[in-house]
Every structure is written in C-alpha cells, then in structure tokens.
Image (spheres, rainbow, N blue to C red):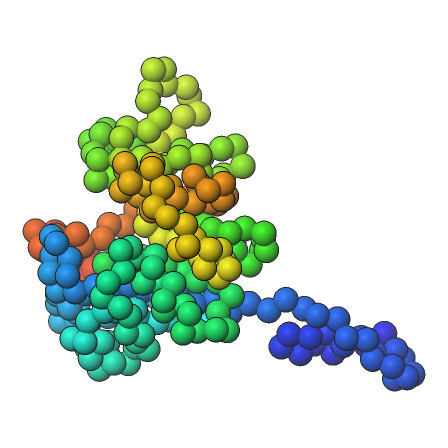
Amino acid sequence: MQEILGNSCLFSASSDNSRLTHVSVPSTHIVGILPARWGSTRFPGKPLHRLIGKPLIQHVWERCLGCKMLDRVVIATDDERIREAALDFGAEVILTSPDHPTGTDRIAEAAAAIPEATHVINIQGDEPLIDPALIDELARAMTSDAALPMVTAANPVDDEAAYLDPNVVKVVLDLTGHALYFSRSPLPYRRTTPDRLQIYRHKGIYGYRRDFLETFITWPPSPLEQAESLEQLRALENGARIKVIITDDDSIGLDTPAQAPLIESLLSHLTSSTSPH
C-alpha cells in the first residue's frame, strides 16, 4: 500500500493502482496576532515608543518571527500612525475598529479577515521580551488537542509582593493543568502552606481555536469578568476549558513610561546575547 500525502488530503493507493481512497487529514493554519492600540490610558502611543532605536511593537513582531509554529504574524491596530510604522518595518497589518470594548474583540475582527486561520494566538504588543519558544508551546498544545478551545500560560512566582499585588494576576490549576480561577487577589488564600503548593503568575498570552474565539465574543461580559476586570473569566464562567502552560519565562511587559529604562536595558542585554558573534 502506498500513501501519497498532500497539504490536506491523504490518498491511499492499492498496489495495482486500481483505485484511490480519499481520506481527509486535518490541517492547521496558526496566526499570531499582535493587538496595538494607540489610546492607552497609562501610556498613550505606547506601541511606537522607541527602545534601542526601534518601536516597541517592532521588537515584539521580530520576536514572533523566531517562532517555528506560526504560519503568519499580523499586527492589528486601530491607528493609522501605528499602521504606517508597521508597514515601514515590513509587518502585515490589519486596521481594526477603534470602538472595540476588549482586546479579544480586536483580535476577532482581525481573524475574520484571515479565513484560512484555524487557530489564533493573541500576543500582547507590549511584551518585547516574550520567548518565541513559549508561543510555539501554546501552538503545539492547541494542535495536539483538537477539542481544546483555549490555552494560556503562567510562571511560578515566589515573591510575596507579587502575590499581594493586584496588578499581578494569579491563576490556580486543577490536577490536569487547566485553570480553575484567575484573580488579582492573593490566590489561593494560604490558611496553611502545603509542601507542593505553588503560586502562579498568569501571563497575558492566549491561544484560541477559531470557532471558540468567534463564540467567545458573542457572550456578554460576565459577572466575575467585570468584578476582576479579567476577560478570561468569561470563558470559565461559560464552562470552557483553559489549558495553562507552565513556563520559566518570567519576562515583563511595558505598562508605563517609568518602566521603559528597565525594559530597554533588558532588551539590550537580550539582543546582545542572541546576536551572532
């Protein structure tokens, strides 16, 4: 028996070539989308803030180009200035509505313009230190489990200040590695401290199966989502599974202008350590 593998079909031919049997083979097209909004309350124009000579969003885009699992990388923005800058450094750009209530809605609009996309990874446009290997790991998790609607990531944290900080989102997991809950509050509450207890900081990167993303944005904001201001709680409140990839990547994003010197220093070190000698 001979097998001839095409892009999306498997043809099995008998030895005498008397007949061909067509068997459908699932194919995937994974798109990384970087949302980039001009009107940040704490840092207007943040995507174009320059770090070691390049706009912030360009650093993130270049990190994504190092991924092996992404078929396409797209910047989704509501601003013509960001669009022009991204086109100048060679990125593909989708201009989206300025009226989206959430970043997920912006991602969904961009994904709608890419009908071949089977999975979408939402990569925050303010994380120039993101590890490409982590993005690939999320992509592999989705492609290895066709029933998985959503995936995200978290890293262990032992810092008490981070545990108490409402700006650091925590996540607790079930025994199979799926999210039970996300919170800005200390989570879990430690009445006792079992030996195996680990605190996890949630990282704001998400992977979605396309059909789930399309469904997600039709759900109204949920009570826990509104209370915590965390979109991922909408998925849990509607009964969806969220797989959590545990990573050692503890990189931080650029949230305020005051953080820019630290991010620039870390980025400069990363750039010098990865450049060829």
